[in-house]
Length: 136
Image (cartoon, rainbow, N blue to C red):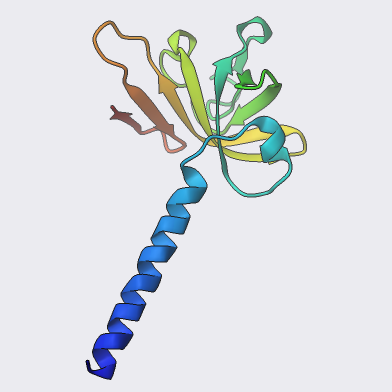
């Protein structure tokens, strides 16, 4: 084999390993306590804590939405999302937050909601720029 072919194969193998390692970091869900220990971005799954309510005032600041969420281990934490309140947030069964913990508050950059449906279980992704995308 020529040197250029060997170098090309090694480069491809390194790229594949890099992509696999990136996917491994985001494929599992974390809890609020795990997110508090590190400054990187986490995926936290849980349920809206309805008894604590929500804070959203479109008149004061349409891009500030705050609520409390209970993660899978039962820890309740305040969540702040710098975007508009997702449509049908109150009807969502399960939430997946993508973001980071700062000073005991989880700052979400994305909110994924599992919406109740009779025929399918769609995940709706809400991004900070206000765009909504549906995933199955």
